[in-house]
Length: 198
Image (cartoon, rainbow, N blue to C red):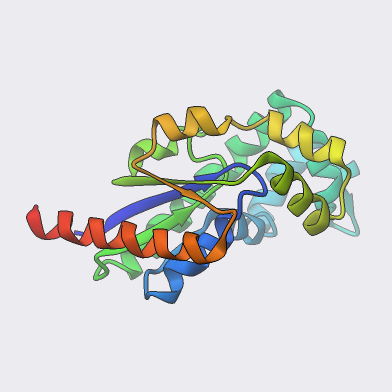
């Protein structure tokens, strides 16, 4: 039976980098945010977004993701409304992906809001990625070409590290890539031992 490792962390913690380390050693990785972006381009989902958020978010029938982000990252109710549309579609897509990877001992599901969504309860193990707040802010400002205030606003919408760590099996501090890569290897070593024992 495939064991699912939930991989999470705050915005800018470097979850995708850690996911890549898992990939490097042959573990299939499902990046929920990337898949959600693809799913949000489907007609079924864009139609639901139009009904919930209005036509003003669309230009030539194409969703303006920046406008949508502006709305949902500043309003918890609007974010919940969007999640109610997107999350069920992502869940269905993940189940299909999981079936394709059924012969694997482990797979990784990477998502920013694993705890906030309650999805963490569906996984066998949880790995939380952390990094100093200032590094996270700088990473996101650079990556998303956004302001410090916008990054801080998005951070406030997520759980803090302390809360995430309290529900995690493993924690990776992602401020040094060499050490973080070694931590991934160590986690897999521990999980493979547990797998043999069960």
